[in-house]
Image (cartoon, rainbow, N blue to C red; front, side):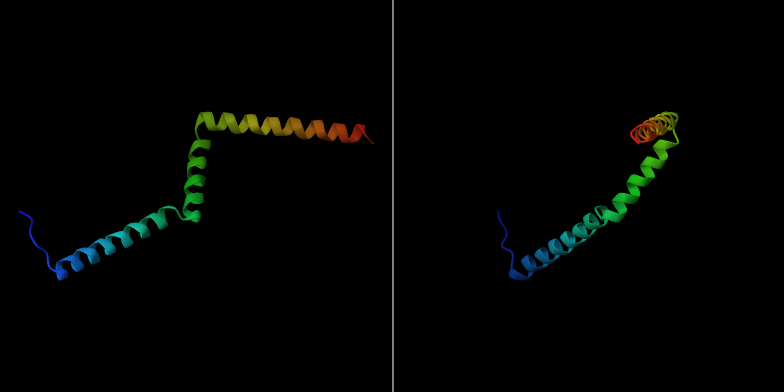
Length: 80
């Protein structure tokens, strides 16, 4: 059998739901703050860079960058 609720009980439930929603929104805002996201990405990248695979990727990227810079320097000197 359905029980009848009076207005004060309904108001109390609505207020409780509103408070819970406010807490949830605050938690989401904190988790999705741009500064926090940037800090999380930085931490993750630093951790990955310390692994053997990360070191190999960074070394390869550095080598590629060096080759491209040398090639561009040679081209610019040749075109003079």
